[in-house]
Length: 465
Image (cartoon, rainbow, N blue to C red; front, top):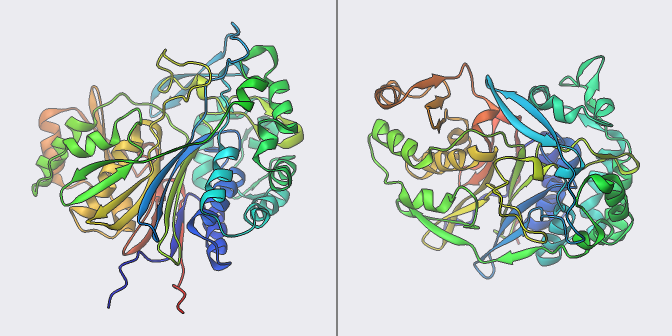
């Protein structure tokens, strides 16, 4: 009889992150153990995208009970101790020939969620000792990692934010940005990871790292002790949408309404018609997003996908702990004018699981701000509708509509380009690009990780007996 479970494997945004997740599974860990280990490893190896002071979301499928749960550990709006009038530093990022405004500095720092989130994920579904799950990140933080070439390309784009403060020493090299293949090393980050292992997430909310964060922000931002002490992870039941014959399950309250997009799209055998319909349901303004995702399936058939982000990064550093504070309050696409102290900020991040009947057939997530929705939609369509293996589905060329044009990667079928050109201005990019999002996912064919961001995968044999 064919085993209905998905293969045991991990998909991540970096080889270091993938190795750490695979090692956790080999040690007998659950999908939660591997996911936590990967998130923390990403906070060392993928720091142009994420970090310990960022936030994120996880979705977890527990095979024994056939239940799916979402964890919200995204950043919260500070200001419980009073709002200040500090003005953030405005910067512009040249992304794809378009200057996109952002803000950095202490006034952009929101309440972090990653430490609480990984602790909650481990507490809820983990099997390994907490110290064992954190240990790989400690080791990599102590020695540094090889900086991925595609991450260096992203760094060159966002250098105005990353080369502020201590960032000039971490990400700068001889008057330029750190090149791919060089050592990425955050002095002090090993200490922060050891504090997390020894003192738990509480150190970031009521302990010594909380004190350091409040001191670093000072009077130029709103982050305070009450903000940190009040933070908590939110556990929710997911929402559900339908795409063809499958159900897509995700958190359901993301800013881009991912599930509503799935529900609104009617599949069609004609690729040109389908592409035109995708443009209609996806059209949104272009924004920059620095996030990373990981997916894992363990030996018992448990599934987990996690997406985390640091924002563009604030330029505020805590040298003692090697921590770069988030800049979520400077992310224009997230700030909607309705933010209230103590409440979550909105986000586009939405890791998901697809089901056929009651059997999960795909688990994954995406990075890329407002391209998260388009990347996930197209990958799921490629798997479910076009029956492509997930690695091929992720590597396939994508489109992304904006108000005045449609951006496309090279390789889309001529009939698709013809249909799009009849209705919109089409801009064909010279190669696959991180602009179009980064997906990490697993289906029955195995794992897939996005070549646009240097993703990597590991597949393991399923243990028997």
